Image (tube, rainbow, N blue to C red; front, side, top):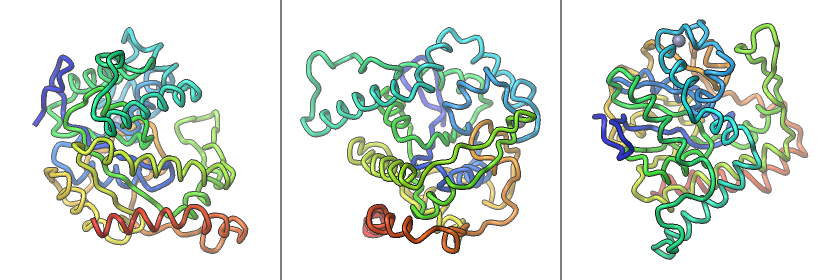
Length: 323
Ligand SMILES: [Zn+2]
């Protein structure tokens, strides 16, 4: 049921997909969109907000965002929103994000550990763009046609810390985690961006060291969310389980997060998504684990990951199983 988030409007509950990039979140979003009752998939919310109105990127249905029947109203509203310029800065300036995110995180930890905030912190946010999230969600909720749930595939842990910090009620998260070797290998692949059209853009390539560092940062931060915000329903699943037994993995998410299901996972419904992995354009005819890294990833890189990231991967999944 839509609920009053306390920010001037009724808003549907949000199911967030949190974790590191290239972890199979597009597949999870696609399956959830078909599986949950009256779900509306937002893709990467930040991409939708910034690039949707600015670049008019195509939706998965093939139409430009401004002509897609599901998104045209939203895009028009977002383009004219008075806070638009702030979103550009807040979402695309990485140094600004990091500075603001660190302040937000430190404050959340302090509140959790000490149990209260300093007097000067009450009622205010670390200088930054947290309040801009609220009108974004309000605009989307207002234009949604009675959605039971919104799926936000932003992944970035700081994004969900921001939603939690601004008091978005009815937020729950699925932490999707994939083997670090597979993620590092994926970031070495040159993937075209279909939405760039004749510009022929490609997804950015990342060095093994950088993608390993980001994998650790994102997953450890995501794993700390339920410790800092214990009231936010949280479930952790692995990409490998999702591919091998999608029904089981979805049932686990639905059960832990108390979501309502609609269709069977395989049944495809109208899927309109802006922003995210190019895989969203082709759909997922068959679901299988992509483990090309096993034959392609160089041994020195594997060794580095075995020493640094693989133990964390195992620990996070072991903790999940014993939880
Ligand atoms: Zn569309």
